[in-house]
Amino acid sequence: MLAANAASDPDSKHAEAYRYLRERIVSLELAPASVLDEQALAEAIGVGLTPVRQALRRLAWESLVVILPRRGTIVADLHPADIENIFEMRLELEALAAELAALRATPAELAALDGLIERTRAELDGANDPDTLIALERETHGALWEASGNAQLVRTLDWLYVHVLRLWNYALPRIEGIPALTADHLAIVDAVRAHDASAARQRMHDHVHGFQLAFRAAWSGVRGDHPRAAAGSGDH
Image (cartoon, rainbow, N blue to C red):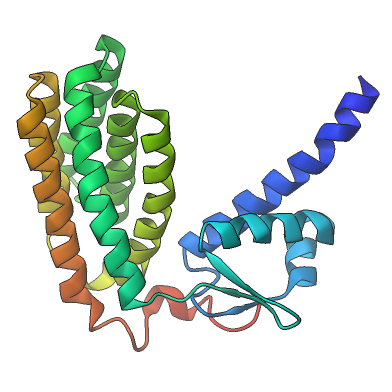
């Protein structure tokens, strides 16, 4: 038992460092293009340098940081070409997930989607808080991925969505129409519940495309001073 605990402890510390860093990169607390101080991060997390370096290698594989040999590590910047690549992939894969969910969703998965839609309706009829709506967006998409029954698709979309959330956080103060975009989920889930694969695919395609248009409209205005990124800029 002691040997097993000792063997798992490094993995636990690596996972802790990974979660800490990924969350702060996505939230922009660690701003795009900022330099990362490994020692300061290790002290902030409460782990050694090895788990931090393991986490950074994993984040580099996920394209969230860039490791420069003999020069250090920086948070990946947001480049228009990379964003367009993400858009292209997400447009097709999200549509596929919705189509498969309409064909494969179990009663339990449909019930979970219904619960999310009830919460979405309540928020749309109430506070309409952008951060709450974005959180519901993430949960609803995740539930649809799971209902697709394709584990590889789920993993790929989860990786893509991390980048999407970073974009949301970067452009959110200038993105318009978030309530309308979130309301798209109602029609998507209706199609999934009706087992209408074609409609589910098209409605999801239109929803993701609508997000892309909203983000592009906001993008030109966020490359200067940015309220969320500014607080996390500089060395860490």
